[in-house]
Length: 351
Image (cartoon, rainbow, N blue to C red; front, side):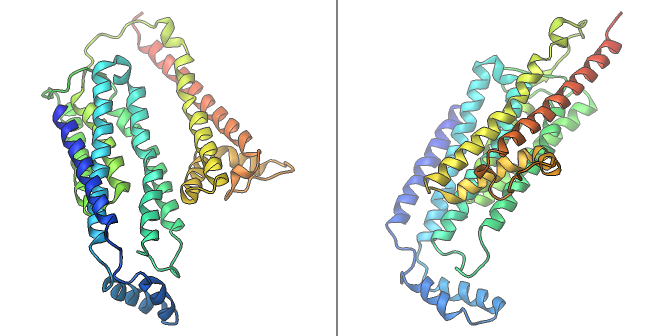
């Protein structure tokens, strides 16, 4: 753990130094080159226009972009490493951090970091004219990446939880040799998954792709905890207890949805009203829209005197009922799942 912390801190310091050095160098030898090329190439056909833009603009570029991207990649690697190390340290110290709820929260947070990372990545490239002013809006790739991240989180979270069924978190991270074919398959899957994330991080540092570096680093820490921070639960199944029937723990887990919705909702409104980080505001807004899509669709289908505009839901208080309605659906689904599991345990428990 100490090696991880020291390495991450060095990466952060080195990345910060490179960013500082890049800021001392102008982006282009001619500061007016992007504006001048935008006007000169505007009359060309679209495909030729883009080709000429990148060819001619490269002639004016200095070492700023290369140094800045390496610095940003190194700093992002350091930040991700320090956050991952902090969570692994908390997992060793606190027993509550070793359960499935903590793993799920950490995994979802890793995906959630895509939102600020995507906004930062594309914002930097827009400011330094990596994209021509007459090109497509950067909002298209941004929203596509965010929506893809939300879908990926929904798909991968059940897979991650399935790999923890029958396993208990431990305070130590050690290699435990599998004793069955299913355990070997679990370990191989996790190792391959971690290898993929490592490769994504390695190829992203030079280009400063924080959209991969920080989320993948946090995801890597989570998968490492699942692979080497859990042991097989060999305790015999006990008869049902009061805690098995209690729905309170399930209900507490559903509270993640309204809290996350209100955080996205409030943050987007603050950024928009303060005229700060407009791209980030829209990204957070769309995150809130996506996770409350069931409630919004139901409200749209009802004969109500108002409608929620999908592009700007925070302008109408009618978005709040959508949060409540979606949360109610989640609570209902959790209740039915809880009751079904309770009946399954009742049938399988010793008489």
